[in-house]
Length: 131
Image (tube, rainbow, N blue to C red; front, side):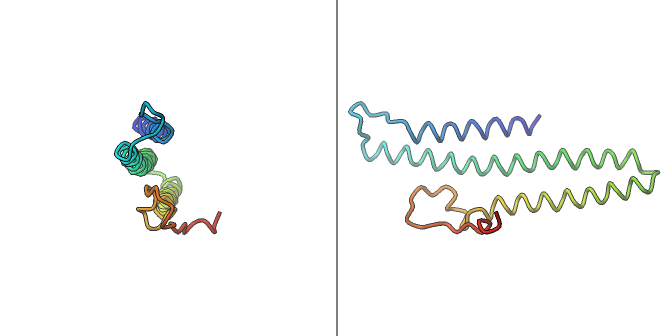
């Protein structure tokens, strides 16, 4: 249930970022400098929240996976083969969690470039060559 909450909230944040990026509040069709700075700050906060929600989403998904694996482990504690398979699955799940978290944070280096709206300082995509 928590994963669904984080997914819906993440999509809401992205839609609000899109809305703020396309909307002009001024009556003359041209925004003042202060309105533009407020809009850009709101977009920056939205992008920071999006990154935080992605991390929370990953953590909640993997906590559900680990809790199910530990539950199965308690059920199969008298069976050596199944316990061994569950331990191997737990290790694989832990490795995939670490890879997901690392790929999230290494997708834009330095991490501040994830929410930077100016194109003056290009962020370096560490994982760009792998995909």
